[in-house]
Image 1 (tube, helix red, strand yellow):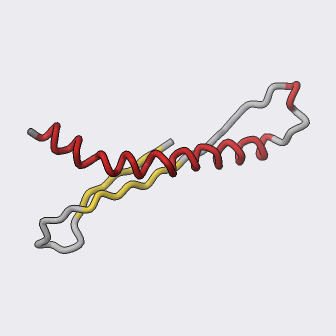
Image 2 (cartoon, rainbow, N blue to C red; image 1 turned 90 degrees about the horizontal axis):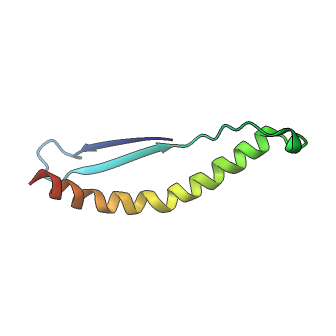
Length: 75
């Protein structure tokens, strides 16, 4: 998983900052012999979709809390 976070403003003289996050999730697995009948790509894509759903729930919460943490650690 990779999460890129950047901060910027929409206008050069604006005091309002915008926090942007771009996250990438990729699942790679090794399938035990007992499950070799199931294609690896099917398992990997299912795992990727599940983790993307989890990230979709967690990321908005993180982004909402980030300004609170920034303020707490900057003092």
